[in-house]
Length: 558
Image (tube, one colour):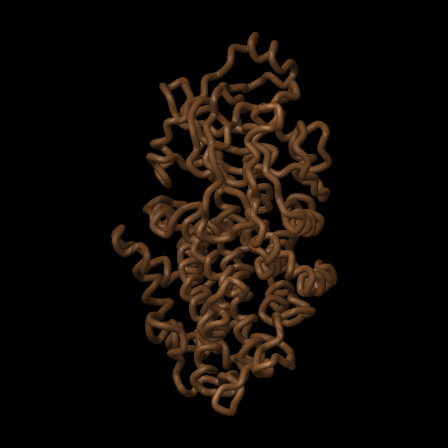
């Protein structure tokens, strides 16, 4: 206790610190082994201990307390558009890059997507802004592989585990980060309305400017309303180009520095004043004759960038699951130390109901995300690839949509001290909406799900893959069996009903996974509150016969 002239400070929770984020998370540990990432368990155990240290958790606060600053000009008046970050940001980025959170699936064997997903979930409990450039760097690899000459030049630096924040041409760096710039003021998700144009350079001009690097070069004029992580070494963008059939969107790689060592004509207009994290930079930019290199075929920019988009959407699910896990951990840690009316909060039935409901939501999000990561690991299996085609948009819709209400409820557990910026709950709450918005809003995800469930042979095979996944849960639970049968019998719906369909698919997969792998007291409570009756309203509406104490003991190991 600390004594003041007027009072003593007591009955307040000590900050969560010096814990092993992997060890205390039973659902994550079980899912890692079950889904094929167990080969990396020792490394994840060590990483969990490192990330849970007080000084590492403090890095997250500092990086958001001191956001990046844009320096558009140097002392001599030259345009530089450089960003200055607090040292805490660089420490966080170094942890992420050295752990392989951006590269391990492309360098390791079976189970690497699952192991990487576990890493990403734990990093999401420390700081979220630093995950953004890491996600884009991780996800760019399938797109860049469609341009072999670019891939040969860039991938060795992208896949490096050396964090190199220096502003230099790629040839002089030990590691590289990649950002994205898709949306424009007039279009948002409707990228086909983009007005940014790119004109192919004549071979002689490209050769004169860039020598052997002059193949597939375009001059770009236009803007991007959201240009994520402008400090990155290059960005993938979409621009209108001439094609054999007229014109269409193409995907281009725009480096910050050109092969001749000059800065590219990418002008940062301002940094976004975001609702969420303050640590990372997002910007508005103009391209005043910038140079970009074609990725994929001309006019095929959307399919090319979707090679990246499916992986960024996986990370939106993982990011939301990680942030929810963090909010639950802080709330339950607080409730076990705080007394009200003579009892610890965690011992009071109504609070137990709230906390257990949050714990169920968090575990269901974790097991779904880890199962989806295995689909990515096993993408060579057509059934797994088709299952991922369904579960990625559905999961991004439902799990990301559950996040903001989850954060608000966890904040309420802590009370007034959770509603101030000194609390980690404030940062989590502000961050949780972004994953629903970024990389396709909820409606865009649901429309994508409808496309995957169309009347093509691939759609029929995808429905069969989903049925096979759900059948693994068996028929022991009558409520689940009835829910599954109704879902599989009615997989077609109008556009207006697409949100409900996405919700039903995710809930069915979550329930099936919990029935197969979680204790009965977890699966039965989840089915009673999500399958037997539709989820809705506030958290804390579990039936009275739920084993609250067992659920909470499992949710956060002492």
